[in-house]
Amino acid sequence: MTDAFTVQGIPVTDLADRFGTPLYVYDAEVLADAYTELRRRLHPAVDIFYSAKANPNVSVCAVMRSLGAGLEVSSLAELATARWAGTAPDDVIFLGPGKSEEELRACLEYGIAAVVCESLEELETLDRLSPPGRRVLLRVNPAFTTKGARLSMGGKPRQFGIDHEMLLGSGSALRALRNVRVAGIHAYMGTRILDADGVVQNTAGILAAARELSAELGFPLETVDIGGGLGIAYFENEKDLDLDRLTDGVNAVVGEFAAEHPGCRVIMELGRYLAGRCGMYVVRARYVKRSKGEWFVVTDGGMNHHMAAVGVGSFVKRNFPIRSIDRHGELADRMYTVTGPLCTPDDVLGRRVALPEVRPGDLIGVERSGAYGPTSSPVLFLSHGYPAEVLVSGATAHLVRHRDTVGDLLGRQVLVDPPAPGPDPVTVTGTAQTVPE
Image 1 (cartoon, rainbow, N blue to C red):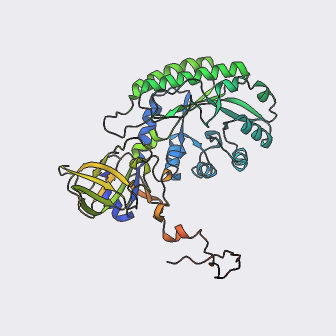
Image 2 (spheres, rainbow, N blue to C red):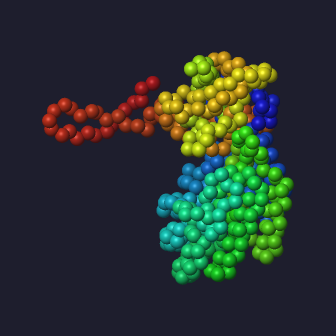
Image 3 (cartoon, helix red, strand yellow):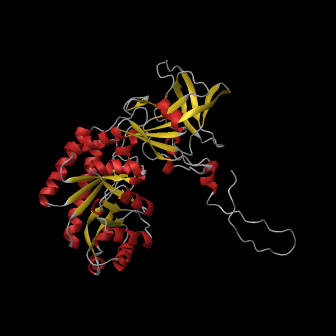
């Protein structure tokens, strides 16, 4: 956020009053700054692609497209989002270990830069569906292990990609292709990396794998996707990446590679790093209560919208940065457990959070919430639905996603008549019903 409690001069309290809570607020200036700061430092051979999975809101994607970023997508809806946001086909790649034929056909129809094939079987399927001459990238599961990732996605047994060793022996399968042509590789080693040297080592390892596979299998290196995985600091004792150290190291290894392979497009794909810092999740305190000596703030939003902050599945619960919106000038001298409204003990946004005195009706903000928010959360749990989303751009607040209504949640369901009592089996058929208000 541009200020802890305003976005481009607009008070967060005003946004909450206007759009209601729970509410995600995205700052387009912060989003743009994350991209332009990295773009200014990176080697010109590197293209930055935005990973839509981090925050697939079409307006967020459109901001990234306007800045010059490509888009990495992984579903039909994300592909449609890329088109809706105005992304050129040559700036779209499609990933995913289990693509359907419908998805592959849609990629071919749109003429995207490349489908990233994650198995030899998928490569054969795409070859069968494709007109002649379409480019593909091979996702490689490298032989080396991840450096510095909080979540490893390569170098170990994984559903992602094709093992490096297996690819080296796949020359006959590649020579049998009739329609698609292999034009490079993709590798993604891990996510939320905060160690610049780890990113550099991963990049060097991926480029070395690209050289070897190209030489051994005889395909050109027109595109190499080096992944990314750049993280942002969320928790106490974490620090954001040293961007100068990162780009100095990456530029050195990319520069050497670019000199050997002039014209090769090197892609760095980033989601959390670009979008994470631009967002705040805003909730309103409904009740403040005491239980066995501990103070609780029960708010109107939680795990159903922001499972990353709740930390479900983490070994240790750690708090995202959380602050009071209404009483930011007061001393944060009270400790609260901040929860959502759900009927589960997992619904805890923060434990022992230092805040000024919290009163019912106060607003609380979870910062650094622009990535992996509602779309990676159980938004239908207890049928609360999707929160509203607002993008502030040019000092104007835009509603970029409507809050789910009861009609939205129930409108796709079908009510069937219950079976009549009696000993004989009854066949039940469904008929559409009007959703009650």
